[in-house]
Amino acid sequence: MEKNVHTTEQEEEARQERRRKNRRFNAVLYAVSACLILFGIFIILRDQTDLFNRNTGVVPDAPFPPDVTIETPVPAATANSRPAEPTKPPPPDETPAPSQGAESAPVSVFFEGHGISVAVIPVGVNDKGEMDTIPRHDIAGWYMYGPAPAQDGNCIIAGHNRYHGQKGLFAVLHKGLKVGERVCVTTEDGKDHFYTVESIENYRYDAVPESVMAPGGERRLTLITCMGDFDYDAQMSLTRVVAVCKPID
Image 1 (cartoon, rainbow, N blue to C red):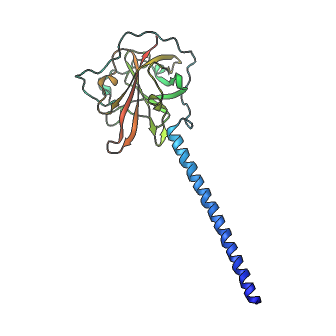
Image 2 (cartoon, one colour):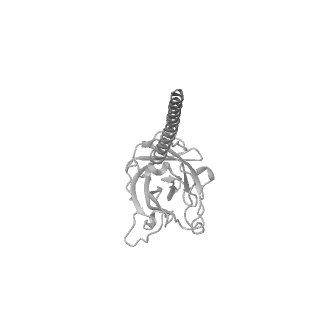
Image 3 (tube, one colour):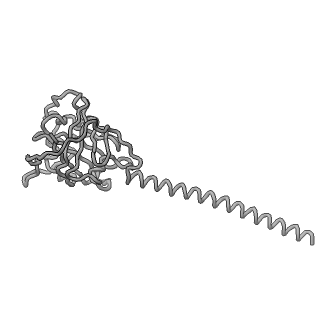
């Protein structure tokens, strides 16, 4: 009788120990699951929101001037225009070198209605003959072989919509920016150059009007980013978002 009682007590202790182990295992499993869920939420928020993005540029010191009426139309594509990639400007040897000093190069672009300020650094062309890009989600590139903001012609600045899974600051071009809103480009000499957004167009990467990357013409600012999922066959996003801005004099 005593042996049976002793055996029963041992079995009960063994069952309780198994239950304790199961509870510990379940607690660890729940903790790991919660961490994975939180990590997934973090990845989604980082990719889709500005919560983890910090401005890298500067906010202009001077207030935006009032808008003025601009009568000169923005250069538009014609029926005979030959499509060209927006990231493929004229080769540097065919484009006069910028005559401005280094102090007039753009260092920051600020989107007034969105509180987004993006640092800008000069870029040239890559080994494919295309306008180079900055390997950062939060920094944009200015095409250094084209005009600077103070010069006549087309000042081109391009930034990432998304880079390495992180939402780019230039995503504002298709996630909030509207025609009529204003932007400011600050140059190295400390001057602020103000613009009004005149048009925002989406193009397939191989069907962009030549005027988008043309360096000449009237003074204007062209902002470019990508849109859509990455196409691994083409090794790029297939849509380009192009915002053309006219100066506020």
